[in-house]
Length: 267
Ligand code: NDP
Image (cartoon, rainbow, N blue to C red):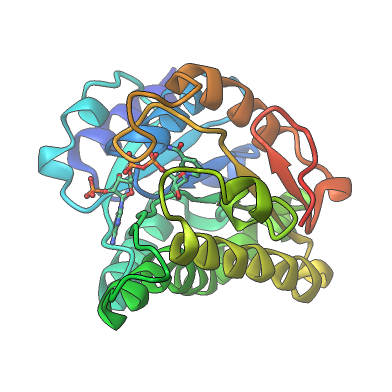
């Protein structure tokens, strides 16, 4: 009870809490782009999970994150994070460390993303391509690197830590011929997700000795601002199983690519 009331204090101020961090194995999860869409859906599910103690939800503008602030849970902390800004990442990492202390970061969910649409036969700008790659590929790399120390702390203390990259079927080279019939042009978005998939595999190999795992996921085609109203899945239909899947990952999932329902995706 004492710990819960301290959580509440910490949440109100959004500052460092004074929890008795070493007294038990606290599990902390970070979700980027959590103010709307799939990130918001994941946070809604994560706070309900008994195995999760702290959920750090990030948004570019916490003040405007009304749906996120409407989630009533003592587990929830909100942090400002603009994922393409290295200073913002550094500030968020410091604040995160203040909240979780020696327990580190158990699960990092790189969810925030954008979908820039352009046909390859159009005169699209280099800026559009660079922005696509910066947000969907470079930013998850910079964030994951910056949080390495906190992931390692959790892995050392609790056996393992996990990076969960929210990719897309669009990033599957095998699936590209199927995507070709899609009315929306996906080329530069797909490139950004294929590169994110490779980053996932590289992390899974390079950080294996640290017991930090990395896995990538397609959340399905989901009704969000990005997915649109015609998408196949509601937010819950995607994020309920996806949350369970992320929380149940083992060494067998390391460096692999899964759908939200656990089905393996061909690269
Ligand atoms: P939305 O467009 O609904 O939400 C995107 C989220 O990412 C928002 O919270 C947005 O914040 C955040 N974001 C974008 N750019 C930045 C940035 N530079 N810094 C910080 N936050 C940023 O998308 P979805 O929820 O649908 O998608 C989430 C993830 O799932 C993405 O990676 C996407 O590629 C992937 N995905 C989605 C599918 C779908 O059908 N919806 C299908 C396959 C994959 P803000 O509100 O400030 O813009």
